[in-house]
Length: 127
Image (cartoon, rainbow, N blue to C red; front, side):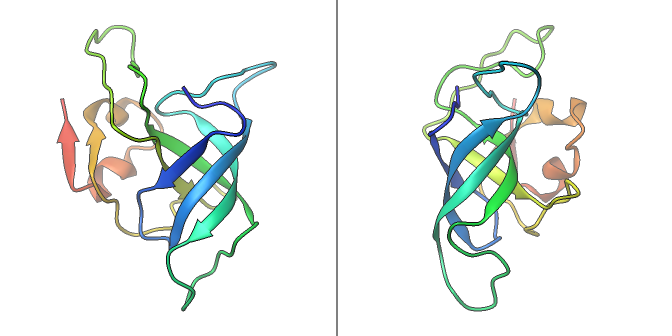
């Protein structure tokens, strides 16, 4: 579960390496984010400095894709998913993807969320 202050690795080609969560969207007093939730984050480090729109310290929106804790996207499907790292994908202010590629596997249950384009850009599926 992701909370304020948690660091996440960015798994797309937006040029950002790591972000830190500063807010979890989704209601009054929502404390934790799981896979599929929207967060607001600050950029902590970048991969390369050439031809990049984002810079260190910018505040961006991101969708959580991978968590170290067992998580369910839907309650009907009882298959828990656990990854080795916390991962996110950066979104623009209009909730569009900034990157054009996604590295690593993505949970197949993302087709039931509003971020179904993530599945078409990812390199593989997990259950």
